[in-house]
Length: 359
Image 1: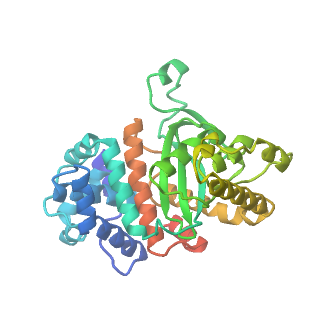
Image 2 (image 1 turned 60 degrees about the horizontal axis):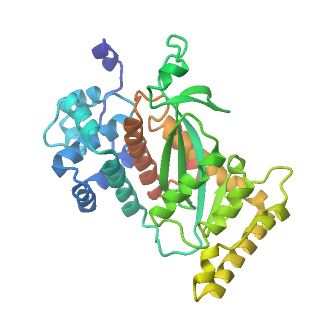
Image 3 (image 1 turned 45 degrees about the horizontal axis):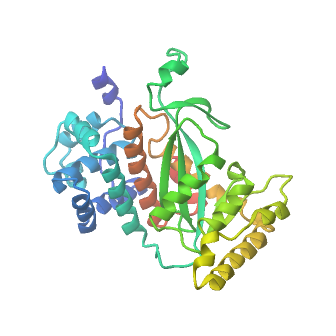
């Protein structure tokens, strides 16, 4: 049956006059570079040449939304495709799946993050970056009408029931993504089961950005109303020294936020506490100034929604055929790499992103 299904798919014929194949060529190049091999070796993903081949087969599978088995069949039929992917020895499909499942989750994600960091060329020393953060539903390909999922059954599963305005009720996970503006290159992502409220994920994503030294003092971080919480305004400045721009709700009272603003007690033990006080005062001043102009930010924040659509419609992130948290995180990591390379290649204008989503 799978053979008949594969027969109906379009052949994977390399066409360097096609913009989609040209973008894929840039993505493939990113995985064959010396830096990419160093990242694989650094994370213990070896042998490097074999690991690179497996990764590129997975990328091609996701890029054209076809099964790995179909990619293997096409590789065996087409020498040009084999050369395009830089695959010297064609593996069995089971070998690819086994490779993907055996790699340590943290090492795999660290490798992908390393590739993205190298590709973006975003200077970590640049001050006052603008970062956009938002979340989206990751739905799993489960026939919920045929397979009723009870609470007891879900206790044994990594995924949970969730709800979003666009997907409705769904079994799966929630993806939280942070991107740099205006490059739109992904900086970090997190996966949570179900659909925890965005406001409760504020510290999780900020901790990740802080742990990886992505955020710096004075960076502007833009959130939509889902992250709205008086405490999140305060925590953004006090704990992370960023300028949080969280779209306010109707009854928002800036004075209530100001009453909650207190200096961290540990700054008074520093001999430079006056200087540190000035830093916090400047952050608060900038936050108040920008929140008064919050209506200028929705158009900027909406760009991350275009990236989610690109990831789902063009790069196979819609209705995943994966059901463990580890597998989903690895799959999402590759997806984020695809988006990152696409943006790093200069496809970060709204019209271009929307056009790619329709491929």
